[in-house]
Every structure is written in C-alpha cells, then in structure tokens.
Length: 478
Ligand code: SF4
Ligand code: SF4
Image 1 (tube, helix red, strand yellow):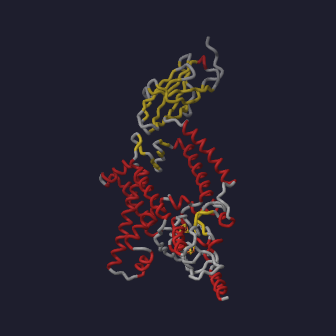
Image 2 (cartoon, rainbow, N blue to C red):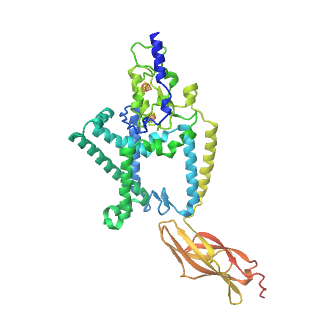
Image 3 (cartoon, rainbow, N blue to C red):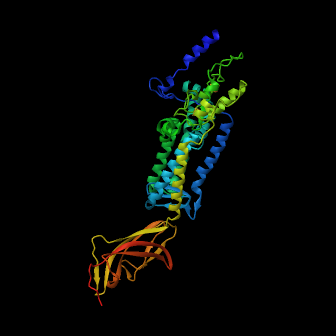
C-alpha cells in the first residue's frame, strides 16, 4: 500500500510544466547555464572518430587545388562559386538555384527518414562545440560538477588562471577556425597574402578575420546550445519535417514508465527507468528526453550512452533510450518507408536528373550577342546592309582565350569594330563590338536569325544566336 502511495506521489511530480518554457530559461526568463556532463560510451567514441574525420576535411579542403583552382570556393561577395573544381558564375544562377532546391529536398527527405542525424553527427556547430571547445573546457575546468564548483567559488588566483586559460584558448581556436572559414570564401592563396603582406594592404580581409573570430568566440564561449535551439532555422523546422515514423533519439516510455528510483528490492509494477537523471545531466541542450521528442534535441546520442551505462549497472537490457520512431516505441513498428518519403524520393530523382543534364550541357565559354540598342541597319553601297552588335563573353576556364567570330548560317562578313579578336581573360569576361554585313539578296524578311560561331584558332568553342534587322520590301537587284 505504501508503495502505491509512493508511486502516486511520484507520478504527480512528472507533470507537463517542461512545455511552459525552454529548458535553458528559468521562470524569471533568465538563462540557465547548461553544465553538460562529459558523455562516455560507444556512441560518443564513434562520434569522436567522425569528428576527427570532419576536422581533417574542414582543415584540409582549402589546400586542395584542381588545375590551380581550389576544389571548393564560396565567394559570395563576388558571386563566384567553385564546386568540385568547376566554376559557377552569376550566369549559372539557374544551375545554382536548382542545386539549392535539390539540396533542400534532400534535407527534407533525410530529415523525414532520419530526424536530426545530421545535427548530432556532422553539423559543424555541434562538432566544434562538443568535440573541440567542450573537450578543451573539460580539460581546463574539469567535468560538469567541477565547472559548477568553479563558477560558484570566489575569484582566487587559481580561478582567474583557469578562466583566463580557457578564454584565451577559446579565442585562439576561434581565430584558427575563422582563418579557415575565410579561406572557403576567398581561397587559401588570398588568405596567405592577408597573413604575410603588410596589414594596410589587406585591411578589409584582416578585419573580416577578426570579425569572424569574435563571432565564433562569442558562439562557443557564451551562446553555445542556443545556436541550435533558438537560431538554427533547420532546428526550427523539425516540427514540420518530422513525423511519427521518423527515426529520432527516443526514450522508450512503454518500457521505462512508471519510473522509480532504483531499489535493490525491485518493485514489480515499475518500469526500467530508475530516474537517475544521467540522461539529463549529459544533455548539451539541457532537456529531459523522457518528456518525448523536443525541438531542442540535437540528436547527439549522449543520453543513449548515459542510459545504457545505467542499465548495465542495474542489470537491465540496454536501449531504454535509443534510435527509434514514435510509432516504433508506441506500437512496436519497424522503421517504415512512408508515402511522404516516396514522394520526396521521386522528386529528388527528377531534380537530380535535371541537374545532371544542366551540368553536362553547361558551357565553359558562353556569352551573348545583342544588336546595339537604338541603331537601325546601315546601307553599305548598293548591295549590302550592316548591323552593329555588342558581344559579351564569359570564360570559366583557367586559360586566356583569344576568340574569333565567324558567321555560321548565312554568307556575309563580320567586321570588328574594336580589333580583330576578342581577348577573354581566364575566369573573366570579355566584350567587344562588331558589324555584320549581309548581301541584300539574302535578306528576305525584316528579321533574320543569325548564328555566330566563337573560335579559338580553328577550334570552335560555341555558337551564339542573334537577329539581323534588314530593310523591308527592298526592291530586288538583278
Ligand atoms: S536529448 Fe539526448 S540526443 Fe537529444 S540533445 Fe539531449 S543528450 Fe543529445
Ligand atoms: S538515464 Fe535512463 S534510467 Fe536514468 S533517468 Fe535517464 S532514462 Fe531513466
């Protein structure tokens, strides 16, 4: 009977008040600092290895060059992007836009199926926070209880030294990350110039490094989990992307409830959860996964490791917290490939196909030929007519190309208004003006479609189209 009363009392304690506010905000609206205990276990070890791979890629990629170009470059200020060594210009905005849409569909599909697997395992924010900055913090200040103790202790020389060491280390790490981050925008060669050449010549670049360092330091030293729980738009979208079949880090409430403190004398009606709070103590976002799937959960698996350890200690099966779907926990269903996932998969295949076609047909040299605005045709003697054109050419290759123009589909002449050929610098643009002269006898209509071939020596690079404006109802010359 006593036991029943105790169970009733404890059940009342498990109320729904956690939904009233975020786990990291107290009732007065002030931030509650999360002192996450260091996770230990299988998942943490695997994540540590994954993070090492991530660091190698993040810090190594900027140094990889393909034909003198970086493998990846995201130069947003100049709207120039290099992906797998291929240069994308504003003119490729269609391909770029489609790539973005494909990527978003992939994210939706991936999230519908695997929840926040990305956040927990490969998101740079999580990896830098949990696998670099948090580890440095554990090394300097100790595990969570020691950190709390240090926070509440008076400002002694030892405390000042520890805090100073931590923040200087954090800033240095942020500075290093900022340099590499910038190298993804401007390229490692330009970054080298900023570092080695006089400051006055690269004041803008140097200011960017300091600005990024300050932002990273602010995020990892102070803002921390709030980047995921408050700011990240992907995190905010979980509510609409996840459904009951999505795989998430989940607490098996069927098996775990009613939770009770562990007693040697096991009470028959109790679940497997021994209410030890280890899953809450290790959570970097400060939530209690036993309250169900929450937007603050970044799927880091720390609670799985913590709970498995406790289950082993009390001789119960592991997996009370595990990767599972809501339907899996509630009805014992296996992970399913739902209708929604099938729809996204078909969409993804179509988009990827279209993207592949666009990429395959994308030209390294491209341009436009437009008749000079406001100009009519010009009579050339008694037997010919000319039009003035402006040409713009973009060269996405890493070689300068001198281009010669040739008329492809009609007899006639091209007279360059500015020099004989158009020089198009590597990864740059070239422009020029020229006349096209056609004999009267072939002008049968007011507007004639012309094809202009671009040649590098004898090698044809591409064909551009334009229109020729001629006189209407010209009398025939015999
Ligand atoms: S609930 Fe578990 S998986 Fe989710 S953030 Fe907290 S520790 Fe990580
Ligand atoms: S770690 Fe496991 S047993 Fe302990 S409170 Fe969390 S769910 Fe319950």
